[in-house]
Structure formats: structure tokens, C-alpha cells
Image (tube, rainbow, N blue to C red; front, side, top):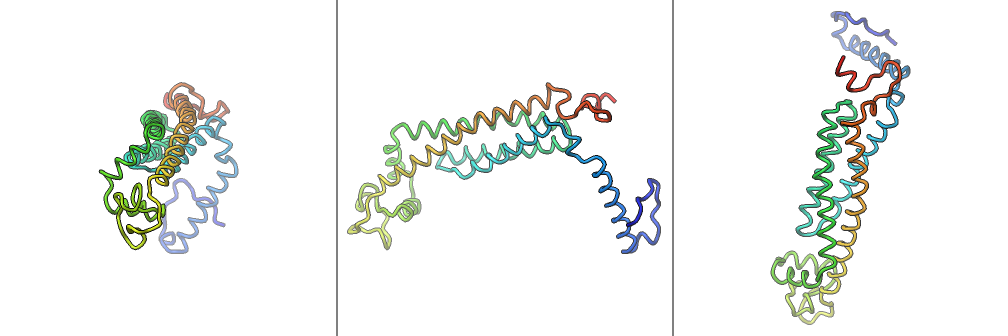
Length: 244
């Protein structure tokens, strides 16, 4: 393997060839491998920095999972919360790997509206699940749902019409006035209640985890000077590095 190139090395005509480029690439790989073997990154990272990374990945994970839940008007709010959480996690990861407190400050600020969105989704789902759910479903079925939406419900729940096959039904090959299929009211109410219960349970369960992420981000971005860098020789904190 070729030796490491000198700092003031000037490219020659040989280096421009395929063989020369390959030799310089192998030399660069050797330098990187030697540097990593002598001082791997996981030895430079403190426990607090690993906690910060874990919290950012945790935020990224549950923000992606919450995309699974969607229901009418809650869809937009849950989508906004999850997308905002994913963007916040990406900003936090940039701040972690670049060791930049400015990025971490942006990350901390972005966590607050994300927390508000998650709590709002849980509150709306809880209120809808506990207050006159059947009446809300009936009103939506009669006044808001289109033919395509009713057909989707009927085909997936194997039902016909709302109360019975003659009450606001959308007829197709399986749904017609003389069918033995039941109405969709009971099945659809149970389906939406289970979905809403899962949604508000998940949202309120995420809230304390999100608070943990916010506290870790706040400490790393503002209050604890040596949280990301240790006091070992050769390693300086963000503030010390800035003063230098």
C-alpha cells in the first residue's frame, strides 16, 4: 500500500492516470484507517453526547411511526406533527455530528411546536372518541362522505348502507337492497373508536418521551458547557473552542 502523501505534495502527470489516482486513493484510505485506529470517534464522544444522539434518533423513530395514524381532519395535524418531528430530528443530527450549538439551538426551538402538535392530536382524538362518536359518524356519512368514500367503507367492512342496505347505501355488486349484509353503523363505529383510542394513547405516551428529548436538547444547546466534549486533554468544549 502506498505511503501517505506529503502535505505540500504537487500532482504529477502520473497522478492524472488511472493508476496514479488509484495509488493516491489507497494512500488516503491508509491515512483514514490509521487515524481511526488511533483515535476512533466513539472514544471522543462523551456519554452525554451519546444520550443526545439517542434522543434525536428516538424523535426520528416515533415521528415516523405516527404517520401510520390518520383520520379525516386529524390526518393533517398528525401529518404536520410527524413531518415536523422528522425535520427537527434531522436538524438535531446535523448539530450533533457537526458539534455546532447553533444548529442545536434551532433543534431545541423546533421541538416546542412539535410537542404542541402531538398533544393537540391526542386531545382531539380523545375528545372525539369519548363524545357522541356515533352521532359524528352518522353526520359525516350523511352529509360529508362522497360515493367513493362510502364504497371504500362498505367494501372494507363488508357492510351495506349506514343503518341497513336501504339507508344511504352506495350500491355495487355486493351491496344492493335485498342483500344480507348488515349496515355499516356498528362496524364503522367500532373501527373508528379503536383507531381513535390507539391514536390518543400513542400521542399521550409520546408526550413524556418528547419532553425528555426537549430537556436533553436544551441542556446541550445552552446550559451545560462540557456536555458534548469531555475535559480530557486535547478536547475542548464548544465555548472554549469559540474563544480560541
